Image (tube, rainbow, N blue to C red):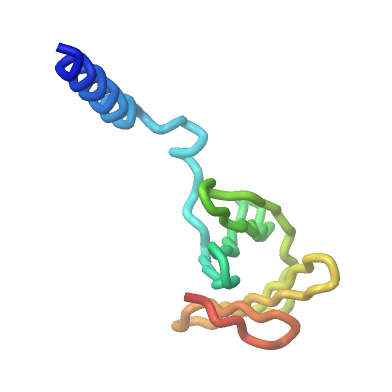
Length: 120
């Protein structure tokens, strides 16, 4: 009898998790726009990513996320990117200068202090 109760309890918990996972996504997340560019970077651990967004007023922002082990994101910072020429954007993190080149017909590229980063 005890095994049957344990089985029923575990089945209920699994079924409840599946039902709640089908609920609607929060409105704020559902309306979030897709990034203009996505740069995943292998940092030798769980990874990190740079996401480029353009707001309605033409302002560019870069979101830098560092992934964690056991948690989706351990750090998320937002930086304002300045337009430098027709195809380049630049932003700074501390003393590091990052540049994004968006040439027409090519995939966007991410540079750190003038050297292209190997993105996945």
